[in-house]
Image (cartoon, rainbow, N blue to C red; front, side, top):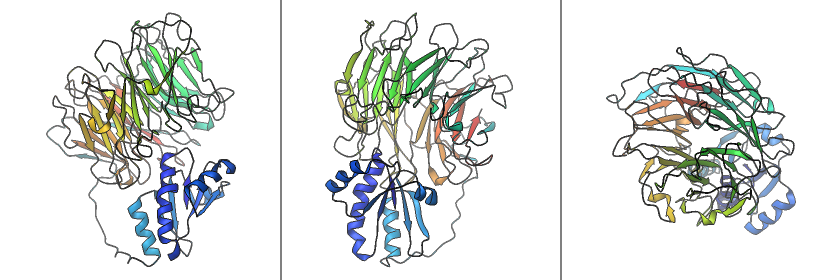
Length: 557
């Protein structure tokens, strides 16, 4: 059985390309294939696609019962033998799936079981380069609230000191908490962050997904860091919203100071955010991604730009950038950096669903900032007009799904990094590094990156999460990369250096237990306890230590 959704590129490749090949190859030997529409799309929309692709196996609309029975998720393959026993259940791996099929059909002998001992510490730290590690990390865990799931999925992209007391605060979200979503704030102090949340803010109504994105910065110029929270299905029409909470000596209020509304229903406005000055007027502009926007084509995605001013943000966007083609998902990721060194920030936007010469290769678009002033009119721009376009190298790479900025070669310029964890075809995953200040042509490939870091073993989803933070205090940002290694999850630390070379990690932090998804998200935490050293956060959203997959947030300081 294959679980799929039509909008999911991994699902499409799995169900409509690879599984078709295996069905045609082994059906006459006894293989049966059933594809289950996970999200119950309209049957009349699915039928012509199935016909055009020449799919002969059964494609069914799941009413929820099969998902419940087999705990299926999108892009998951389940192999059941003749006795009804599950022999394989995981994200798709071509080589392993075909091996299982051959064994069950009697075409391949099942290998003898051997006892293997893997020397990996349980939830511990592997120090691979002991000469560089001169500090030991203190570690604490915040578990998710009872009867909620997913703590550790959603972390901020920047450090946050919301009450300006000199101690950075811990902020995280559970966008699924009680179906509304919620953000949790632990204010920092000289003894570290508070053990219990000092503030919890819930979404307005069920299904809001409040907290899907978290960002911050001094928006109104009062010296306090303000909090930006996205709710991809917020407001009455589920159009999505972005909430701005102004910081103060007391921290942030429960009531938002500004609410920016999505323009149309169900387009996930607020999926990502970035804060920077792209028009050179000295005010922070707010950049918002809407992953499923249809203005250019079905779910091509869009990026909205709201210029900052003395009056704050107006509800009407100043610029809208639309994706190129259907299912591009422009706006899944956003970042800012001065790429062309003209003193004005530029927009870096990811479109991981972009096909190009394959399926879901992904792309990154760069739009140079320019001095401009708002005339109360919205400027429409197509991604085709980007100043720089960087395409992924391989099908299913999803290049551009994650974009992070930081100075990892110590030259004073912000570099940007993108993960391509490639969930199929036995891939280890990659992280592409582009140094700030380099010459960039209008059309480029991911392979043109200044550095390419490959995962250490196959099927690890290396590049699933990325952050840049100065761990060793040498003034150069270090690179942290999350993966699904060993099924327990792991985070790899690469020390930044003036050469910008990353031959091997210096440290690996391993997850605790199988399938808890340690490392799904990583974030800088600033200096939580003000000891002069930068701290960091690691999410583990399926942790079940304190309930039924309530999730957990790990703090290292």
